[in-house]
Image 1 (cartoon, rainbow over the protein chains, first blue to last red):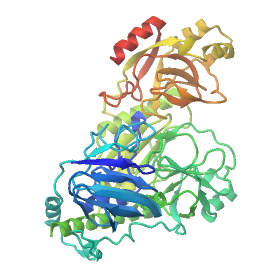
Image 2 (image 1 turned 30 degrees about the vertical axis):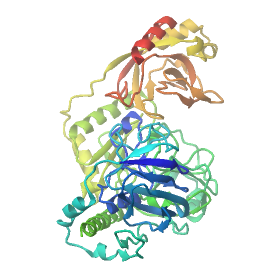
Image 3 (image 1 turned 45 degrees about the horizontal axis):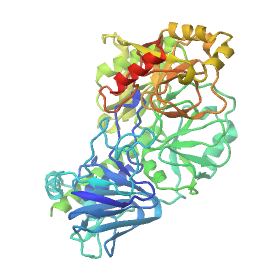
Image 4 (image 1 turned 90 degrees about the vertical axis):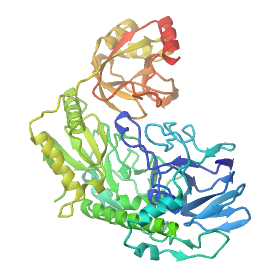
Length: 345
Length: 244
């Protein structure tokens, strides 16, 4: 089944969970900015968590579906129309043959994920379909969608079949009870997920960071400012990284660094004094001091902020950050299993 | 117990977030430290620890990216502590892993002219004539210290000190694929057309990186490299055969 791209949206890219195992060749991971939303979009259409999805940015695409199918959108709050009807995100949406899905502007948050039952059929490149725009790898010829592109939907396992497999392993249905009924709009499913635990674009909530390798090299005022000051996301921020404007941070004395490996969420300090938070398409190595490391559980929240939004940091230690991450993963897996059970009914 | 400042034989371990460790063997750009990084990389690859998603050697450090979910131990301790202990154990036992077998790769280079726009500037900077610059650059044996900046971009150690030259004051917006360049004490090769500030001294007809090829990168960390001067006509014929 094909999907025609009538309008591509501001920056719409194909993303699975990312390109692992090639970093030693200078090939980064790419993948979704908000991995939680991406996995839940797949769950809502019965796909495996790593099936390719579309990552939408601020302004969504207009797509024509050649055949009837089920889609789901998660992430930031975008207006979504299927034909003449406004539809809700965070739920399976039935799309008729020939229907046009029109995703408008983001009302809150920055990024949304569109999954289609069966997943998008794209040839993986170096083990992943994720689009790396800078390296021109993966996705649609290594670039964002354009008007006139055709997306092919895979012959993946049907939602119901996957749902039944998962349901047979599920005992805990607490997460399923967290789903709530939604108004019927002609869709076959009459429930939706409560986005609240999984989507939070509130810029007043601090982003938790661990001290980086070079935190102690900051001067006293900068060490204090990192946790006390409000930073703002600069307009030159993208999938590679977010530049943070605020008080200029400085080292107590210059340090000579050779390039060292980086990770998503690394907070780098270039000589100008404005930190950069590395995001999904970050380079594999870099030579700036690493003053902090954003907690993995807070990366989706930072990914949903936009240029101009405030960022404040709070400190978290490694053990706590890792514990929070494991808790989130358990909760997310329970929810994904519960969604599968619900789809199988 | 925190993983910070944990040490092993000859290296220290720093956390790089919840899902990566940084093994530090030194601080600088020296060949001996870098050789230990590649030996450790080979030992870690041979150890096949569970849940390792990426091993990234750099000049003096190496990142081990892991999946914390693969290191959950119900009894106690954080995944980070378990990975640190497993890494230490690898290096505390006598090394039975075969040492890293470096591949030797000859890179044909057409120096100067339209292929190396900065060769004359480098010659002036070095106080040598262009022929001597070429002779020195192609006489040395280099090590691929790491790949980064772009897929398949090798950072090479081993440049003749006489050929060290700072980067250009204003970077070029387009450096052609295959360009051999000098940036400070390092020499490197642009695998694809990229923006860049290094001094361009020649170009190779070889494709350094092709995502559809297996392996995609001509060079991997730890490989040994020599540059072999070729003429413009050899460049043209090699380019035709390599790209066809």
